[in-house]
Image 1 (cartoon, rainbow, N blue to C red):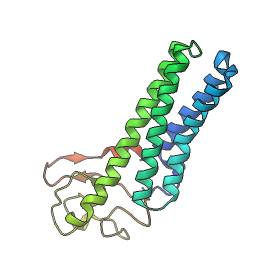
Image 2: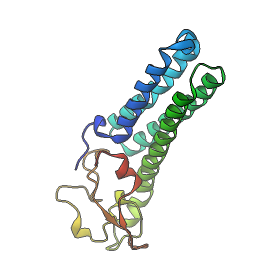
Image 3: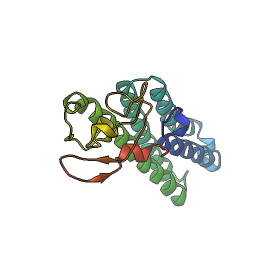
Length: 189
């Protein structure tokens, strides 16, 4: 399946859930009256989903990886601000746990997606000539069989006009394992 819209990315969908939850929690109680902290928390939450979308729209792996790093930084910023809001008694323990858990989950998805993009970029040139690829990244065509590349795909068998992916199960030539990478799990596949 080819991802053609940022809205199809599970990592973006998860960031949308987080931003909505942040707005819900920050609109009530004492946090709703502390305009400075409330606005900063909201900006950090919105920044995560916005940077994912902007990186996707840039049509290059390097730009996408860069914006994913910025989004992850915003997730850590939000997490830190949530600790302060909790310490000040602005956020209940259950709300803090929910939002902090979403931040952790989202930052893991972001780093997995970014790592996969960077791994593809660094291994792509060195693995294209091999019939049995020695890379655990599905993004560099680690299907073990160059004939399994989908018709119309690029020489790596994955990218088709920018960072829009056609993910398929992969076989790692050096480890002999079959599965899906963290990057493909971050996509809506």
